[in-house]
Image (spheres, rainbow, N blue to C red):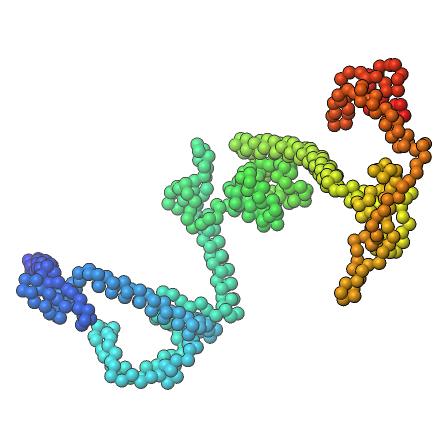
Length: 522
């Protein structure tokens, strides 16, 4: 006993002494890197000596060099180059190797499809020795000699590390993947069936929540067993469904178009069992076939849970409140749709009326603009061609004569009889003249193709209204001048402030305009 205690004590003392020696060595020596020699050297601070050899007391341990900028840069560069080289090697391995399934061996093998010389005969490498350690810990060394790579490997290339190459998609691989997925599904279903047999789902009477009782160790838990994963305790029990489960169920029934309405109103399994025919119609399911399919499907599922479920089932008060809120919302929404529809119809009619009024105002504005533009033109430009009794008989097929219709009105008027400085008469165009020729013998077309106009006197008879009015106006001119009253003009009327005497000597006073009295005489 004393001998064992002495041995244990000596071992402990040796460990303590070695630890103190290492601490003193680390405090005495410093390790530095020589960038020229590209190697580390050791510096002793008390004697100022340097050496390339590591202190003997360190053995397999090493001193940590001081973190200089060169050391940090070299470390970062080395890490990046290592990462890049490893990534490049893995990429080359993926390009060079194919992972193929062997039917005979029932396992994958790696086939090298490269063109390297190492695959065909190998390469002789002289003056290089390979060093390693065997299973017993003894070191060994041998010349490298011929270096060669096997074209077929049963093990994964070592350079791939934890990564692997994707297998070639053959019929065997596809069948294996499908079989693996099916076996995984069956294994998961088997494990979950065992879990459901080992646990019981019970309801807490105080909170109304479910808890799970383990029949083997008699433990209880509020959470569902982990081995069930995301699956419900009873997938056929609609009362445990959430909104997403209801949506998935609708998609499986090929009723995806109604899924948005169920998501909008947060209809879960409990609320789904509380809905009736009219509620499904309010949700937008307008086809009776789809409603019957939904009712039949969830009735079939609940019969798997309990055969006489619908004979005893009554919705909970919370679900009835949610259903009444949903129905009230649908009523309000339906009323809002009707109001909006009527408003939109009225708005559309008012918009059409305003558009018609705007079109009418636009047409009126265009018409006024046309009238304004026409009013700015000369009379001969906006009036039609004169076609009275004094119109010249012109040749319709002569374009030279057809172009002078409006020109005659512009220069000479309508050629009606009127009194001028030459007496009563009218203007007439001269005879047609020939166009002169230019220096090259080409005809110069004149403006109107006629000679200068000439005055033609006209002897009007006394019965002509203009002649009679003019003579009477000359005769009454002195008397009108004596009895003249200042007139006030407006846009379309001529008004006088006091009565005037009839110019025809009737002796009666008239409260009418002077211009009207003068016209009444004639």
